[in-house]
Image (cartoon, rainbow, N blue to C red; front, side, top):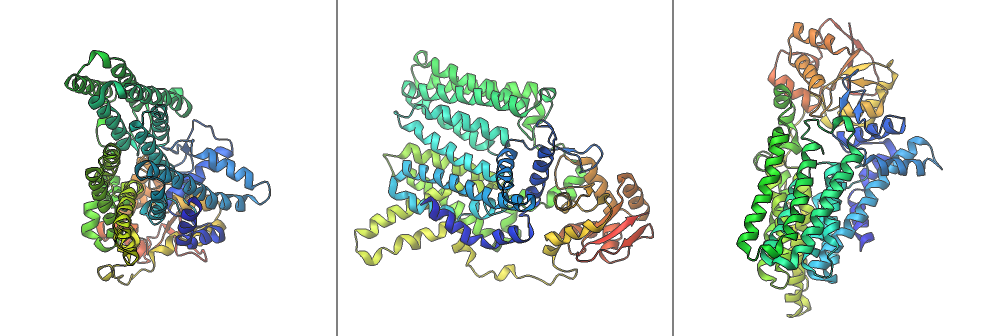
Length: 575
């Protein structure tokens, strides 16, 4: 079944596989920059130094990503390089890595499905997962950023959490804690799900008392120890006290250590807390202690994780990033294209809740699934990209509907056996994608196809230029770094406040302001693609600004056009 799931996923993403192999296409900006960082590491940059020095040089941009995900990428490249060229080895790595992760992901799906509904639920769960938004968006060939790893860890964290309700599997509490620690070390995007894990373990202990104390202690110990180990492995000593909230840092370590130790203490004090009210009060005190510790040591980490982003950069870039939009906004502004992503997770959550109501023998397990799915859906209303995480969990609601409908249909004759497929279909995004996209009709683009701005050939054509820094809009930055030897001023990353503000001020500015900001950037070249959506945002904000002039082919005299064939980018040398 694991191979079947991979085959289904590959059939749906075959065009992307071919594009990666033939032209080195990147799925998005994060995949390009992950490759750049991995190359830098292989070239000798330090393990504790994730700075991208070719972005906003000379100081570079200290990224919030961990080196942990670079390890499997580097190992695969080294293996493939034994029998092929370096370029082919990179492309083989970018194809094989997400396929390997798919296999592991489907193994986690199979584990959860078996624990919820038995072995016969494995097939429908894997098929639904293969057609899910999670696989379509985060696991296609070429996808090498950290999101797919986090989704794999999420499914296995759910599987380990379900073992809480199986008395014979007491060691799974330790595994759950270790997985949570590993997830935090990679990125903090699974943090809401980890909070749900803590709540499930804590609630089970409050309700059941002594029978859950061993699992609670193991989970707390595993979480605290794993958090400490991963912190030492990924964070350099000179940054232990850094006020960092967008990546695993001292703030999260304090929460993990205090919280993990608190769970162990609660478990050991079970005999002194004879009833649920006392256990609830003790758990509430432990939670308040964790929040208080973080608030005292790192108060900024209880705010918006993007609070440090420059206001202008937030307005002109972050507010326009599609994956950072709330799901409600996407449903209102791009209804037809958003429904295939939104409706399956809504229905999957509803079905998980229905299963928790109907399945008395497995109610506790289904409540845990519903809690994981619920926090995922809520998270999607904050940032729509969380929907891909939620989709990895809500497939179990669809699998439950399939199994229960199959039972009902089999008791009424073979003619009705098609009913399970028809009822489970709405849980798959494909069913919603078949809905007529009348409202999503494309209007002609006066400046050309925006997609052409991000094709590989558009950037490799820039290799004819003598090496230098390029001032371009934010989105092309990672592609320029990955496909050329040039450096860039700006890139679509929230830590690059300095370079991004310089670029935005330049593209919005009048002649004098733009010239001043371009010179301050130290760039040798300026490059724009007239069809790019980002350039349209700048032109709309400042109709007489530099971006609007360049889009209309009217550069100021201090920009000297440079002829570069085979690219939609207009390139200028800065005088």
